[in-house]
Length: 145
Image (cartoon, rainbow, N blue to C red; front, side, top):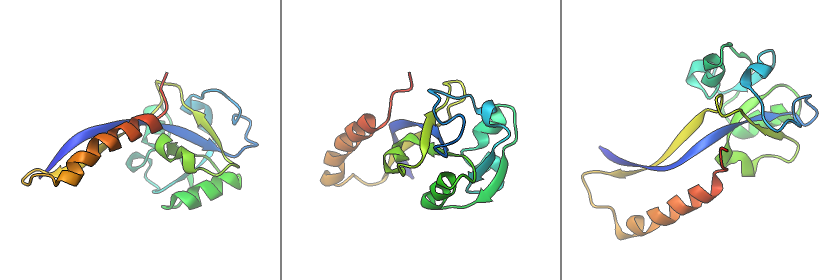
């Protein structure tokens, strides 16, 4: 068994090709992207970040299934579709991709936690490292205002 401790709430952003008509927007509603081709890790939207599309009232048309973030973002940059990306990964995004925040009512949030074995005392290095990790995660996640 594990002890899980909250580390961060990581909001998800939309990754679009830079020339997409909605790429310059300050914020989007997911339903505005209902007719777009999507890039996801699975053809079942409900098992991916695209479950947020289903909750917003539409079944996303998944045009490409790829597991690796680099491949997803390469397809986005080439204009083949949109994808959702966690904000913590945004710093590593290519410069030829537009990242657009979603409206707060549509924004899926990944819960990031630490996990340590419950039955054992954490080594001193782990105990000392966890507060630093929490501060770094808090600083890296953008505000959801």
